[in-house]
Length: 158
Image (cartoon, helix red, strand yellow):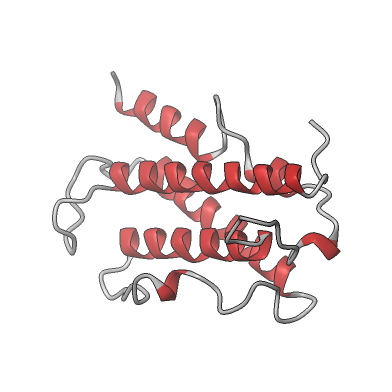
């Protein structure tokens, strides 16, 4: 398989291809009043899931490209403090940051100067390919949770 073919497969996953739902579809038309809604027996709100995804994606991206990056404390640093956005614009800020960081990972994978299989110098065996797949896998898992919560909240049409 060629290098370009591998890149195309990874990009397909990052963008929500195949059996994966894309980020935009998962959050589309979500009523503001449901962002902090709780479902009996479910530990996370939609806000907590969005922020967790944003923080984890940012961490994976920064580790991949910045040798000075320091990851948040595990596990608390990977989750927001509350169940609801702290301000009215917090949701849109988080969505925008998620989109920007996803695009940055897409740009990293697309960059022909980046060797997807080379060990990341400041890591312990990780490669850009591994980090991109981790990001796609983590996002897919939590996007599935978002769809599940939306169904429980009767906020999903499909």
